[in-house]
Amino acid sequence: MNRLGTVIGFTFKNKVRTKSFVITTLLLALLITIGIHLPFIIQMFVGDDEGGDNRIGIAANGQTEIAQQIEDYVSALPGNEIQFADLEGGDAAALNKQAKDQDLKGYLTIAPSEGAAFPAVEYVSENGSVPADVQAVLQPALESAKTRFITEGALSDEQIRQLTTPVQLSTVSYDQLAGTGEQNADGPEGDKFNPMNFITVYVLMTLFFFSAMLTGNMIASEVTSEKSSRVMEILITSVSPLTQMFGKVIGVFLVGLLQIGVFGLTIAINLMLPYNREVLAGFDLDFSQMPFDVLAYGLVFYVLGYFLYALLYAAVGSIVSRTEDLGQAVTPLTMLSLAAFYIGIFSLNNTDSLLMKISSFVPFTSPTTMIARIGLGEIAFWEIAVSLALLLASIFFFGWLSAKIYRTGVLMYGKRPSMKELRKAMKAYKI
Image (cartoon, rainbow, N blue to C red; front, side, top):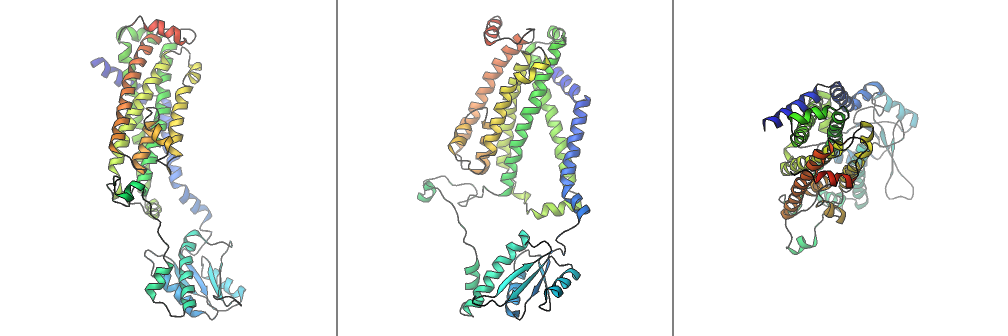
């Protein structure tokens, strides 16, 4: 056990002190910082092309009642930031001048239209388009004003509000409708699709993919470089091959956690800056709704999935004698991790598909697909338990197999051995 701790400590310190690790970590932290600040940097250089913040004008052209109804509807909306300015005169040049002088985002023109039940409404702006946020507010306001105009007071304000409120389409399964299905802990609405769930699932899946790729290749290259430089022959006399393998896997895992911690701290510091906090507030994220159950399950699958791939990378690295051949040797593992990531990431909107259900029980893909099903879909507890059991069984099996391959492969030089040669060599060792 003491030797295992020594190998873990040596691997961790050796990797952390290398120039490649320091430069890569600092470079990625810098890129993350630039990415977070990019919207602010662009705004500093190009300014706000749409201008006028959230102020738009209205040229009523005699339709003052409709203009007032639009203003009243928008001002009553919760969280509304749009303000209106009255524009005088029907001449286009005069209206354009007023809009530019007042630095407006744009303006509405309301004018009678022959043969139409409702006056024609047009939005005028610098680039001839309606911003998405303005469109989302003005559209229901115009619908409400049109209803009032056509009904001419025949409907009450409450009836008009109900007419202009979009219908919400909810979903329910056959079993839930019949009362035989399991209900979410969040209630019948199944508040599983809130933004925090999606963000948590996406981050965990991406984290697993990059960890499996980067740290796995780091482990394989470490073993191969020691073997190619004949250092392995010296190490093998003082530390057993199994201690070396598990020590390297755990040591590199700690290196990966350190790197993740640095990136997480970088993101947190940058998001806490005043101007970035305003941008973050615009996404309306409520961190009190953090799905801790999804986070806990996700971390369990992340750690177990990491060790499954890491042990296989160590085994593959032990049978390669030259670092030039390592890329080709680890290609199958790279393809497996890519498949796990892409199956999960492209099925986030359909987590109950047959592909997701099958892949959530396959140990090589379950670390990503099971996270997606837990966070964004409906899943029974027995499915989670079976998937964890299969993943643990796979870790023990491939750990045993990797240990035999590692113990045999570290002292086999020359061309990469075939499976037949490996089987012959492994028969000579008992683990």
